[in-house]
Image (cartoon, rainbow, N blue to C red; front, side):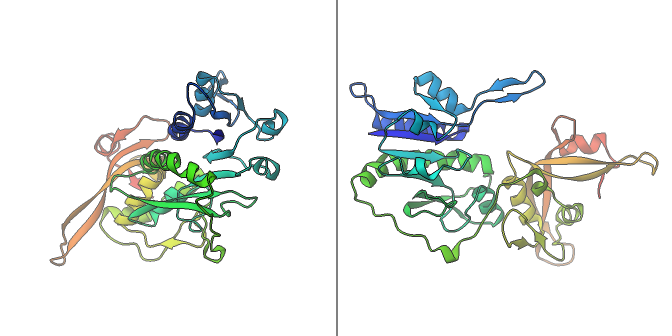
Length: 327
């Protein structure tokens, strides 16, 4: 079996490795016959080119690599199927149609729910108990193609977007090893999505990770802020700010772009300045309410990072800036 793999970040290396090991052999190599990944980018002051983890994997394995999907056609790379996992760019229709069995994609939601680039952060923010994975055949519309298979994975209380993504790609690699032969043998008939039920979670930008200070103050006191918080990257979605929802939001924004807010520093009006503060880790803490026998749940900050500084514990930050307030 011959496979072309489309992918870029470190998260997906276990997938391409598993595909190559499962479908290649020493006698009749095949397996992954080419990869398509994003081109190297200049990084740091010296603008040194940094190659993607999938690029590095291909180099070490001696697998041909390309930075443009159309190069698969130009170089006459023949394969049975393409597998796409966090590639990061749109695949032209002529490339999709080049493969006898098309290109199958790994998407981290139960499609048609949460189409788009940020299904895992959205899943965490929504407070779901399970994450979904859909393996589907791509077409010209984003996350629109017919479904080949779906499965679920339990979400753990400590899961961040990064932690959950690693686990989902590892499970997806296992699933693909048995799914692809069945799919190519015609034992699986892809089914159309119910497009009327589609929801969307677009690509996240840094501004999406902002927590309004008034929401944070309320959560730290164990209070729910009156009103709703519009989460812009999830289409048509708002939530009630509380200790629970903010704790989920902070985990959803890890490892990037990281939740942040504004903090006021300085003891006098003359010295006061507003700075960005990243909130890297937090947890929930319950204690008896002062007004009743009920429990009050507060948000507790564990690790923060003032812009331009290194990460510190919340205790260390308060010791260095006892006058700091969120505003």
